[in-house]
Length: 288
Image (cartoon, rainbow, N blue to C red):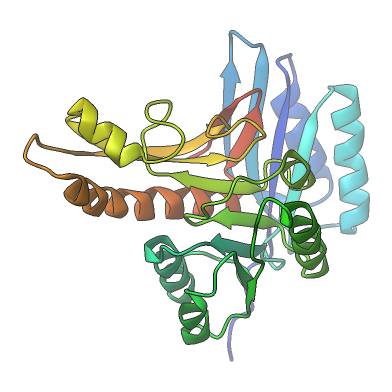
């Protein structure tokens, strides 16, 4: 007999720092029969903001989930708290946006197939048809929306309608070489992860490896961040670097950087899927 999957839930909260937050949340969960499995917290002393991530067993709740969520909402109102609750049996749905470069796409799809990324991937979206063969290998629908200056607004409206119809929770820009409109970004606020092939804030914008080569840098890197209306300036989720040499031509920097890009993007996506990331201002708290 196959054992049933554990019914866990994850609660993410942020609020002004004050006495009694931990006790209030623990009490409301305990009172409804939730068994806390692990909890992590952080306080930004300068900003005066408290953050917490609580993962709990929801299999033996003494009340229904609506009653539990109502109780959490009452605590949240009292403490001016932002909160988000997700359940393990409802995996997030992810749409991957790509252009012509495939290394990040392949990496995400292989990790998903291996069970490293717990989510559903209902579609891949592109402004070119070049990577349709990759989607076919993984049996994932592939939609092409050619983007020009004249068609951008209409195409984005169709993309948004498609994503909403597919109940997409997260958009991953896996080297999608188009600048999204502020309207698109606002529709999926803090739910669009971009990989930038540079250690931001250095070398933002286009051709970062060429810029790095011209400066003779000794480290190159990659940055995964939430997309905002300000290009390459959104809240950073993860970064990493690799050493470079004066002997490295641009092509070698690109090769080295591709490895870093894959790892940084997959970690950022996994942490978002695991509800480990909280955004405040233009920063993030990433719980381990």
